[in-house]
Image (cartoon, helix red, strand yellow):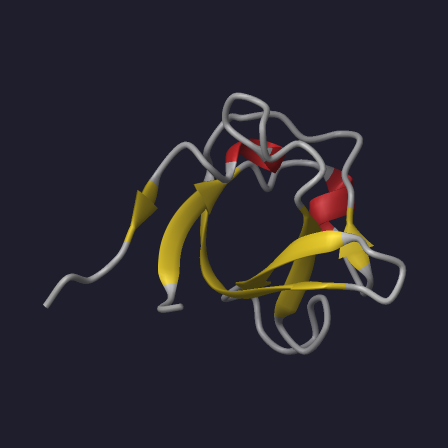
Length: 92
């Protein structure tokens, strides 16, 4: 997998104050207002699937600057916090 640049709705307090674990927001929509990079994916020990995002807010945010975001609404239009609306990746 190569990194993929995406946009996401980062306006909710849950996103802004994320610290650790798999992020399963209750207060985010699909209003794109922030860019992050998808750098991987995984599954927790209890079977929760997630995307691994790198944020540019520094290492004090999230898990050393990273977030695990749930795939629970991956089939919904736009995905969790709209992360599936816009994606860019290099082809060269």
